[in-house]
Amino acid sequence: MDDPEKSNNEKPDLLFADLETGRAFRPLSYPVTPELVADYIETVGDQNPLYSEGGAAKAAGLDAPFAPPGLAAIYSRLSYLQDHTMPSGGVLAKQEFEFHGPIPIGERLTVTARVSESYVDKKERKRVNFLIEAKDYNDELVSITRLYAIWPL
Image (cartoon, rainbow, N blue to C red; front, top):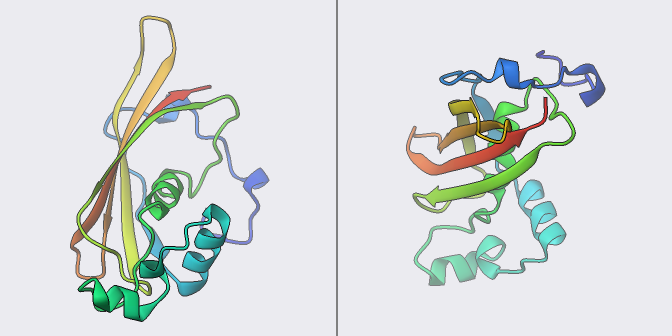
């Protein structure tokens, strides 16, 4: 579905049967806009001046303010749910983040996700593990997310 006007209700659920090991999702283009960063800061209450004040970033040896690392949780999830909705009843079992440097505000990330493992465990729970990589405009890796989920359907 390429129509951004469609609501989540019109997107199909992402089912366990669709999550075979090795499945790759289409790349997500994720703009790290000043508005996005401001909304994130307001929502989580993190007033670190490195995210909003040029002087603080320069004093820390950076060229400009950068995005809060916590945004990785948002773009990671969006990377595999662009064309689907998450069925209710799933559980995020664990997330691991690996950061390779600050992301300047104004950067456009390319985020790729693939299923690194999909299986049914001994308790008959459906397990899905994702490997998600975000790269900057220069194709340099900025983050890796390993997401482990118990899938409902």
